[in-house]
Image 1 (cartoon, helix red, strand yellow):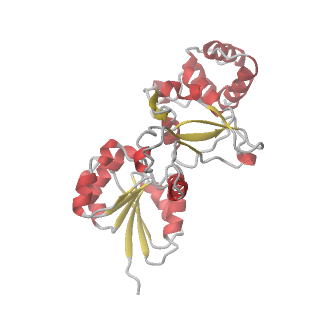
Image 2 (cartoon, one colour; image 1 turned 30 degrees about the vertical axis):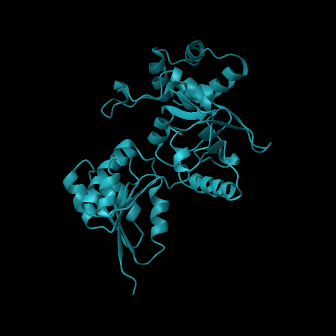
Image 3 (cartoon, one colour; image 1 turned 135 degrees about the vertical axis):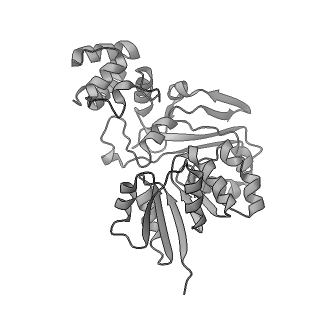
Amino acid sequence: MTAIKNILLLGSGYVAPPCLNYLLRREENHVTVASRRIENVEALAADRPRVTPISLDVDSDKALEEAISKSDIVISLIPYTHHARVIAAAIKHKKHVVTTSYVSPAMLAHDQAAREAGVTIFNEIGVDPGIDHLYAIKTIDEVHQQGGKIVSFLSYCGGLPAPEASNNPLGYKFSWSSRGVLLALRNDAKYLQDGKVVEVNGPNLMDIAKPIYIFPAFAFEGYPNRDSTPYNERYAIPECKTLLRGTLRYQGFPMFIKALVTLGFLNDAHVDCLSAKSPEIKWNAVFAHALGTLDTSESNLTKLALAKTGLEGENARRVLHGLKWYFIHSV
């Protein structure tokens, strides 16, 4: 008889249901799903065998350690800012940890302690980062085995909806934390170009997006994804002079995101009218607030948006279509 495996799954977002379904394919897997809001994990546990829902505040070291101590392995699908705390607790109780997130400095700080405890911390194993790493290593190894060298490495990846499902102005749909997706658009980027480090600050990231030609039937654009510079070491290509890992999106995405940034969106500053205790507010009023006006008429919002973005011609038409779709006509 196969021994029972007790798995602690942290998080109840978009990625949790398919992860849970995959784990439950094996009869020996028993999963405890934890989230701050018990109703979220109760919904996940409903009609699924061998699943125990619990309410857990990961900011409570005592509660986190208690849950981890009862498991054989921890899968953390919560925001990356909590991973270091999870890792520290797991090392203390000698439990392995899996995340799909990039290795942050705070996570890396636990590397030596994990090694000494015999604990495996397995990160960057989603689509991007994850599957792209596997294809990168495969290709690089094949080149090296034939005596070749990698002098330029460009990799673009994106979790995109099928073309027929890309039916909104961004051409994008959330398959993981919507907050995480939007915050990632503010990240600074760093990459190698002809042996020199190029740095781009977050607010200017969409300005350097460029067309990515793959197949004639697809219109893609790409932009740098976070810090690519450590990957010449991680991919074992010290000879590489140009190295960029980028994000792939459908055409028009970067321009629309740039417009949103210019209009005052995609920042995490407190906004009184959007607080949990504020009265219900319509989307066109949210847009008007961002533009500094009380007049929510289409003509006024359109005029102010064009003035603030400085867009003209076809670019203005496309962005205005998106703004109307999301805000101006969404009352």
